[in-house]
Image (cartoon, rainbow, N blue to C red; front, side):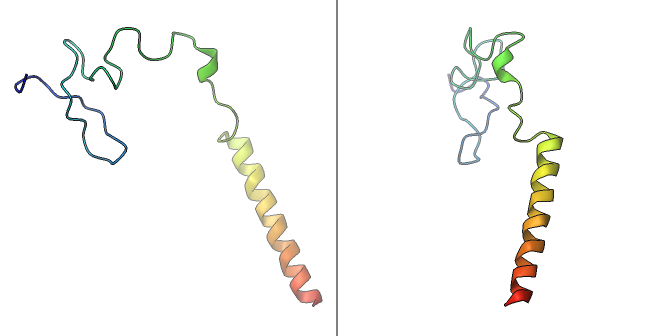
Length: 78
């Protein structure tokens, strides 16, 4: 058990997972080495939801610029 290869995943704290990897795989049973783990092929639920697409990011930046201009204009009116 001590000589077996270790899982290559990182934990939430940023350290390496110290669990032994599943036989023939690079990850432990908790990080995707178990049979049947992970998303099925052509998983439609794994697609981007749109929050981080290029268009959405660009739109948020434009809104931020507009809001900043509005704040500056309101400050000048005071």
